[in-house]
Amino acid sequence: MAAKNILHMLTPHKHVSPFDVNMAADAGFDVIVPYEAVTLEEVGDLVQDAIFSRPPHDGASTAIFFGGDDAVLALDMIDAAKNALVPPFGTHVFADPQGSFTTAAAMVACTEKVLQAKKGRGLKGARIAVFGATGVVGYCAAVIAALEGAEVTLVGHNGVERVQARADEMKQRFGVDVAAVNGASDAEKADVLKETEVVFAAAKAGVRVLTASLLSGAPKLLAAADVNAVPPSGIEGVDVFDLGKEIPGTAALGIGALAIGNVKYQTESGLFKRMIASDEVLALDFRDAFTLARTLVPEL
Ligand SMILES: NC(=O)c1ccc[n+]([C@@H]2O[C@H](COP(=O)([O-])OP(=O)(O)OC[C@H]3O[C@@H](n4cnc5c(N)ncnc54)[C@H](OP(=O)(O)O)[C@@H]3O)[C@@H](O)[C@H]2O)c1
Image (cartoon, rainbow, N blue to C red; front, side, top):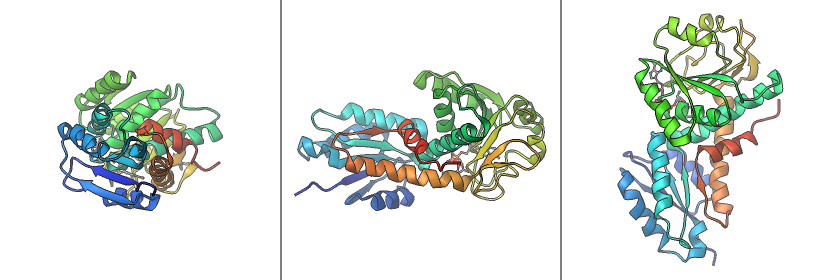
């Protein structure tokens, strides 16, 4: 009898995300078990408890998922899980805290497609400003873009210190050089926008970070992506369904939250399905999500 596909869902929070539980069940896992208030130090023991219960060839029917809302902690948990494996005993490992890895992957992939299809260029060398960069989605989008060769700037909404700390962490963990600036006031945002070619708006739901007036002072802007689906939009003039539509009053193209969400949904589902289908154990983070998301953006 084929081994059941078992998913252990670990979160540092009080609850695992019902969204992720539904996604995993619809992707085809037979058994889904939540583990809550899990600390980084507990990950290794839980992983070893899971892997030694099944013969090695059934390791690829076992998966560990990390939720939460902290990209760095989720990446640390992936590392802790990988370090706990005892070959030939193994398990799949996948993190998507607050849906951020797959959302960021979808945002960058949609933006790349719009740039390629309508502006004749890619992410390499693009000057990208990330608003909401201390959040999980902004963090991952910044790293993905920087790894693709973009010139990324993290824009803080209340000073430069916290975004600079994120930039330092990205350098240490991923080897990418990312700039950090303060964008608390409209004047500071306007200054950032003068040289910006691409905006990623990943601020808190319901917060408008860029007005039409600010966008009109961004002469080099090619595209602006917004992941906030809760009105008002994060970027004025970008509709949630836009995928490469011109933003009124500018020559830039908008990418909206539900266009991104459509690709995000397929990406998360696709990674769950990939674990179920694979005979080899996989370790998946936002870089794998980006690789898949790139294949899922509709043709323009
Ligand atoms: N479309 C989709 O598929 C999808 C999926 C998941 C999430 N989302 C959306 O993606 C966005 C980011 O999610 P997240 O989980 O990364 O959120 P988050 O962790 O709450 O981070 C939000 C970011 O916004 C910043 N922020 C808070 N108040 C602000 C303000 N008044 N002005 C400017 N920035 C402010 C936060 O800064 P602090 O560090 O100071 O708090 C943080 O950098 C949200 O809008 C969420 O709804 C979309």
